Image (cartoon, rainbow, N blue to C red; front, side):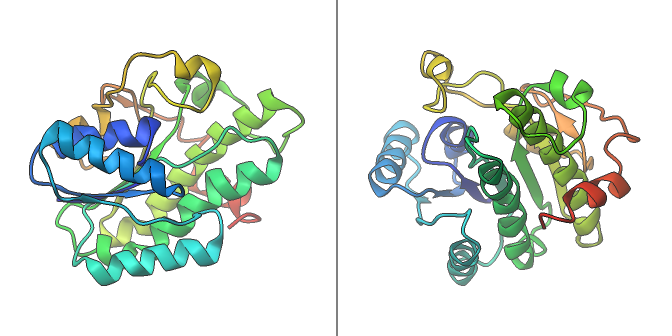
Length: 244
């Protein structure tokens, strides 16, 4: 399979790459820092023996760079089987949340539809968090402080999954959200102390060959059904239209 992972040079994205690197999959890690990207590639090659791992660089939160990175990938590959949107930040501003945690995923996914359509089993995953917030957090536009920014991020990313699953259904492209569990990363002080560096959920989902789309999976790859009234296509369009 051809697998593309944004934010794949560290943290959760690198852990996802690791789960697929044992074997003959072709893996591409999207990142912004060349030293980090090169280290990630070397680490994975040394660990797994898979030499089919490379990286391009680009800031996916800049629409023109997002498009350029995608165009370069399309030129070099015949098909894309799995796209994992793992890149993201702990937002300091509302605009960070919008561009880096929502728009970047939407742009990259749509910029790669032409290759995803060529796969026999195309899958798009968005890395998310805190299932309880996704379930019970209110959907609103408040981003007054860190707490509200976090709730906005998780609910709106889930709305984005709902929207893209609907938009890409005609091309048989599945789009789902995945909670990776606690994984060592540089995002926050407490995640730097986590010892786990494995994410098995996405590979488990792929191995199950599920036909589910527009839904949420936990860190074991088990389905957590979403409230269809809360995360409806109509509500997703209404909430996200101003950003997309």
